[in-house]
Image (cartoon, rainbow, N blue to C red; front, side, top):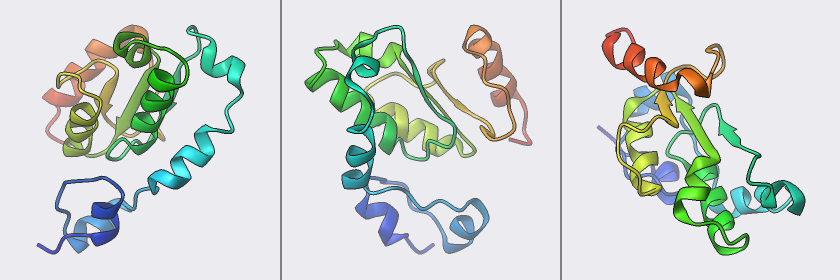
Length: 140
């Protein structure tokens, strides 16, 4: 298995074969670009604890960890407040596990689930059922 050097440089610790990368399209956004994009979010949105953020193809969690960092360092959120605003979904279970590690939350976590965020309807009110469905379905 060859390790994708780009993904390693942008924060991921998972070894991915060239075949997996070809099939899944896993090439992650560098953190400098993540922060540049996050810093364009209006201050009133970042301050509003009722607003949530979802990354429907979260990969190893770069956008979620970038948001977490900004919320906790620039917008005075506690760990719990920041996590309560973040949601992620990804095709690959190991990516979700890595996202949870990077956000310092237990796995499985109801805000971060395995699935296809481009076709699945993500409903936070049923997130635990959604988690159970994905983990019990061997096709995912």
